[in-house]
Amino acid sequence: TTEAVHFHGYDIPKGTMVFANLHEAHFNRELWGDDVEEFRPERWLKSDGGGGKVLEFVKREGFFPFLSGKRVCIGEQLARDELFLFTVGLMQKFRVDMDPSNPLPTLDPKLGGTTQGPKPHKLLFTPRA
Image (cartoon, rainbow, N blue to C red; front, side, top):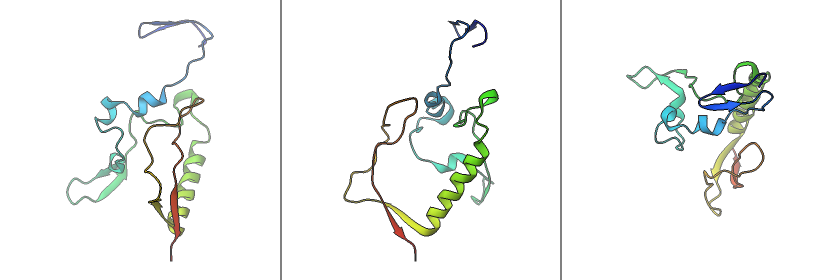
């Protein structure tokens, strides 16, 4: 902080380092519903409401993996483009399945540092014909 502030009942002294709580934002039941931990890609798609035809991608309030405002990542668009190209390239060349000889991955995160990631799990990448 550049100056002392009073925020939501808290006094934050000048010079305090403040971090966004991305976990709270991305797992907020008020924003995402009670099934916040369920994988539902349709949360991000807007349809015509009739035939189910997808019209557009919807940017959701409360989802900001690259932060926002003055602290937004300047490489966000490059990162999004690279993730898209990498994922599409994998999906074009491989079929991805869970390894039946290993347990299914858990949604419990691997804790440590300032970020959370998935616990180790195995996938099978089978080349497409």
